[in-house]
Image (tube, rainbow, N blue to C red):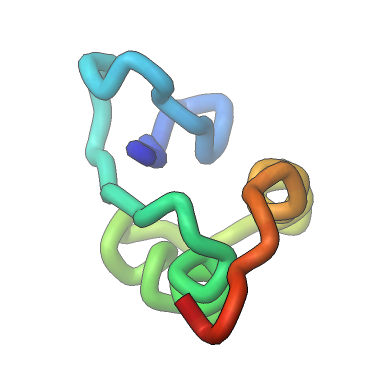
Length: 70
């Protein structure tokens, strides 16, 4: 799953082809939780805004629950 930095904020890029600095995340909640602790902001060279964090949390909440830590 590709996340990109745009002038409007952080967005999910389902095509994987949108212009902008991007980062790839697995479709696992654990990966997203780790990324939201600061790794994603560092990778995208931004300071994460609250609306960006909320947008990403909504995406994370839509991911399937992990079983047995996978």
